[in-house]
Image (cartoon, rainbow, N blue to C red; front, side, top):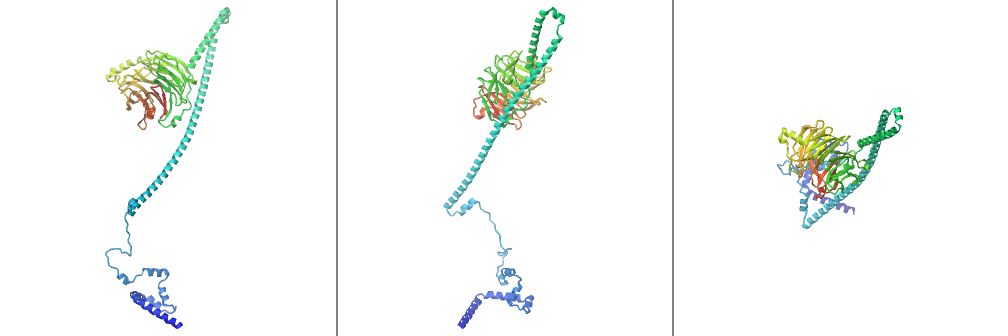
Length: 570
């Protein structure tokens, strides 16, 4: 059995050797060549014939390569010379063995989808998939907007809470200011009464009769004494009353700021006011006290914080065309040619004095400290001392105009573009007075001399309104223009025009606010040189006509032809 197996194994080895030798003859040749080259090296021959280590030939070949990594690297990278000779010649500097790198610009994703689409159905599916993704992204963005809106609503609610808190605090400030004003008035009144009583007692001591004369005329002396005391009391009473009339109110310690937190152009309140057109109006501070006059001959006092009438000023025989409020004192000028001074403190309406000297209706007035200046249709301007109620100076506008034309006939302008009051507007400060008249000329007067210091010529229609500060004078005219003059040089600093005549204006360092008889109030922002409007016309109601406007610290009050009053933030 063992002999048969031995013979079979020899037969298999012989057959395999024959097959391998025949199929891989070329490879054997290469192997023999490689072994021949290796055997020719001196180091290999030295190790081959060295029998001190008694190593086998396979171990001898392995020792040529120092590690397994070198053996693996040699097996992968060593190429026989016969194989290298079979590579065809090429003019290229690079071969496939050294590798190559190629790049191609990628096409847009839409084109890729079309190229990858093997059928129209697949293209439709891809587009529908993209639409679904876009819809999901759109829903996510919409959810973000809803979250932002909810946050904004929450912030708006918080803002409204703080806003209401500020309004409540300002109401408390108003109450405390009124209490302080009452206490100051009472203290001043008590001090004045004490002083007058002391003066009266000292005067009575000096005028006492001698004792002998008193004894001889005992009966008449008693009567005369009673009569004298009566006269003295009457005198003291008159002085006390005069002192009470001339006591000026204290300045406010705090000022309202609530109007600053409204959006510009926001309607704060609309008040159902008079039965006819508003002819004059003024207010002291935002959310404070307002006085309005109308063609229905009524003069009303308002609480702007509540929008309610607190009192009515009765005394004029005709409608009031001009008025001013300051420190709880009001001066009204009427078509009955009179002016009246009123005390409206503590919700009252006491007539303190009446000024009667004009021969025509009063069309403009202004008072500062104890000086009152009024302009009338009788073509005169009168200066009044509010302490005595006397007219201290009369300025003839016609004479002043004649003096101007004597030097330059071109300066006299006839009224064009509509009829206006002869004295359309005026304002005084200390000894300075500015007047605007129907000839379109603005005159600057010195009240100490009663002379015109400078004439500002530029308007082509009657001047209807004016106001000045430290550096500039703003004027509005029937010629539809608003001009801002530089008081230092007498030249025009800025000018602009609207579509209708200017009926009222007021300005500060930031804005110029004008009324033009339209349904909106015209506002010119001086800082950015931009015009904008606010009023019922901006809300779609163009049927209303605004004739009067007053502006202070971002707070606008406008009077309309239908008798109503609008309050706005700007």
